Length: 156
Image 1 (cartoon, rainbow, N blue to C red):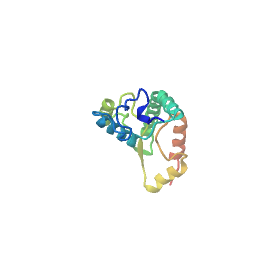
Image 2 (image 1 turned 60 degrees about the vertical axis):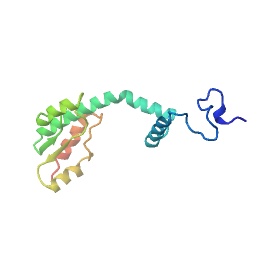
Image 3 (image 1 turned 90 degrees about the vertical axis):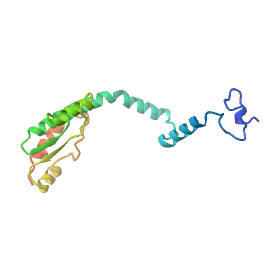
Image 4 (image 1 turned 180 degrees about the vertical axis):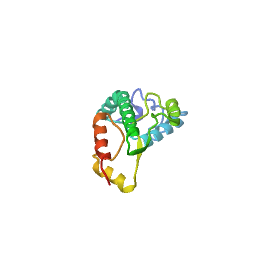
């Protein structure tokens, strides 16, 4: 029975099967690869790799749709009488110029807003809403706007 290092074509066959040390000059590469595997984890299986590839293929479409929907929702919120402030980089203002330089192809799905009134008024809106987060996805903007309209109509 042969030692694993002595199989034909092995890069390691000239080294001792006992020492299992890499050839001279490759230790730094070996250390970098070992560190990468420690940090990034093992090698993905075929199904996991396929899922990741499938997700990456649709990523530009999803990001574009999320940004379009978030911009529409932010604009709607900015016009609503109960909303006192909307924080979204795609709205007109000082932040838009910076966002245009840094965020090519859209402004992303995250936005936040402030309501008129106090804490109980905000709690009433949250309690009346089917959503608590406002990280826009690829769902229909009309569905989000209808839910927000219904929630903002709630009184404390």
